[in-house]
Length: 321
Image 1 (cartoon, rainbow, N blue to C red):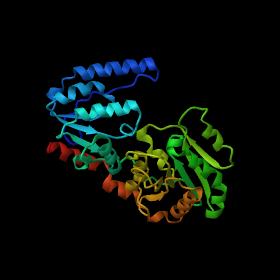
Image 2: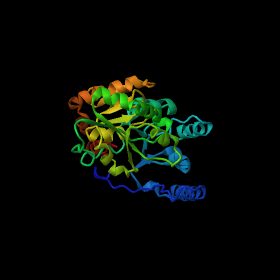
Image 3: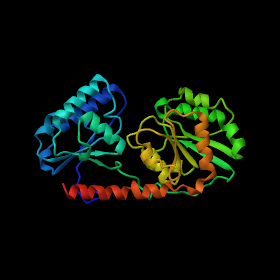
Image 4: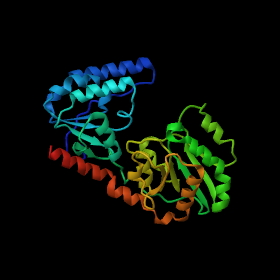
């Protein structure tokens, strides 16, 4: 928004720690600021993660400003009694002339279903977009007879780590078939007792462990890969997928939620079933490995998901608001 030429003041919840006492203190301070903030002085209120801003439920119905709600992540997916109650309160505060932004067409359907909003009132914009000057193709430092596969997600079942584990078991077989040395790159998220990490090393394959990167340095991880593996069950957008593709790395992803919007077979990567067997995954790896030059994921991202395109989107949106 600032790069689009608008003045932006922010009221943000910053975390001072992970302990319950610290979280209570952080939220209490943030909520007091929300209740007392001089909202009337702004032309537009841009609200991110509205589900966590309970004090605004009291104020928003009385605001005369134009209001933009940006929905993403897991906030409209949970179906516990608590989140159902929150959504009930949210619907009571929404007005017909509010602007709603979704990161993907998939998530637009979630917003429509959960909040009873006409899909025609929901704009599509990929969050902040991808900085293609930072996330860009790099020069490979590996030998041509090697193949580097990367798993950039947390080592949890929601992110499909079990498929990575199955792949690790099949690496010796795949190496013989492709006649290439295969390396598996993963990021050491989570605690030391993560049983998946221990299980990986039960097999005699070449694993490359990466310490967690700050988000703005993740390009260093992608640029070491030939193929990015995205086995997540659900993504409102899939920023990791876009970042990898911006580095010209084809992505293999499950055919679910927003992934078909990003992973175009033969262009930016390949899709696998929601519940794939290992042979399907191996087949897609083989297809990309043998035809890597035909994929143009970086071009796909530049044309559709770059930061500059998002700046233009906000300039048009706010100029006409």
